[in-house]
Image (cartoon, rainbow, N blue to C red; front, top):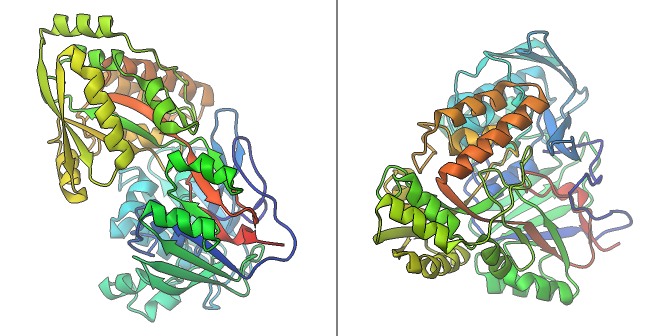
Length: 514
């Protein structure tokens, strides 16, 4: 989500460091999970998007400035301006002139139309992001002339520009892709390991389980990259990750355990900590006993030691809250957590006729923090007669249980890359949605979802989400644990870091030394 006009500007609530002066030639970045693809249409994880964000550009981008409700403002990128029709269904984007791909090919309206149609046709993760799960949301994508593109929507959509700004909607060099298989399985395979964008960097080497290297390209349309090369290392072991940072072999690290962050800060490392819309929660399957009874869910909510968990495991980098919308998400009503009330919890269980219940809490293997939280919950709920069996599953088995609606109770970290309730709640609490893994359904909530999703009036949206939050909090389909900050640890000499809501670093603003 690159931005030419305000690359190093820090907006309300976001972290940044200043740039300037001569810099070291290579920037070393480390992440704690492997990369699966470099193809914008199929990118699905945060670190997939890191590769895409730094090698492609979109028509529009999200900046760091926010409106009064906390929404990041959409700003020009490959399109330097746009218009919206009176019926709010048709956008016309006017393209910057003189923009070229890394190949040297000029970027034209044909490339934009090809790229966005490809996103829709491939049915990868990006199709869901662009359409919020409705493949018919976009009626047509057409070329007006070589420097203008028109996108027609079936319904007015206040979220559309936010969706279009998401990383996977980058413009692909159609001519270059044609040389490597075009719009075919062969082309897809090539694009999974190579890049064909207008971004500030190109791939120099691609080993997605160990290291991905980038080179700054010549002729970039925006401000030039400050580091000529970037090494993106995949380091899954936290001890090794910390060692690399402490030794100076890594300049910017994602995935440092929260318990170790303050120590590293005391040792002279920079810590960038920004409130995040992603949070840890426990899902209670509303379709399985005993959680099909709202009083049982409310009992667990009443006894939840949310603030204690945030204090114990957040190490000063987490926020406890109530309801489905975390404090850092736009339109959050910022509901405060309540202290545990065992008497209220026991009374609710008596009303439900539950003197004892044995339940299974699924935890993904390798998620140490979530496993530790599960153990605390196990002890917290034992006095209520709720015996929790912690069931640790491999990633595939965990996904099968949770995605298949088979899990009775699970713990996970989730949130919306699009930092808006319309996107996140559209699958989290909507009746019948395939990603509503707890099978929660409340028609009042659906009505407020519809208002928030389609209204262009910020006050109407704010009211709808406040009402919805109270309703979901009352129904307790989920137990929000806490929202950990997005924490990044960096070398003392790193400059130019800027936080964006998608939590994907933009390399070209950063350097070390100078």
